[in-house]
Length: 63
Figure (cartoon, rainbow, N blue to C red):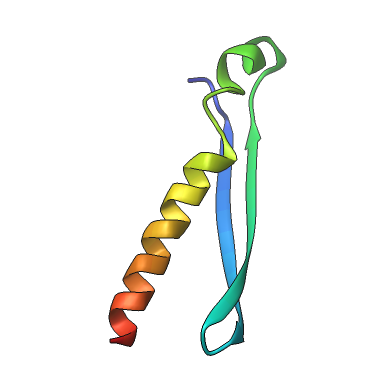
């Protein structure tokens, strides 16, 4: 793909017993000439999919 650095993170901040706020960040570095080929492959939707899996897992622990 040509990405030289890729960092993806999220932080879950509990608001109360039944709700929370999620802060997310995606950072990547790629040479300028490859950017048009890569930018559409790294999307917030990818992170959202992983966050939803994490929420599902956390809720399963709460039972």
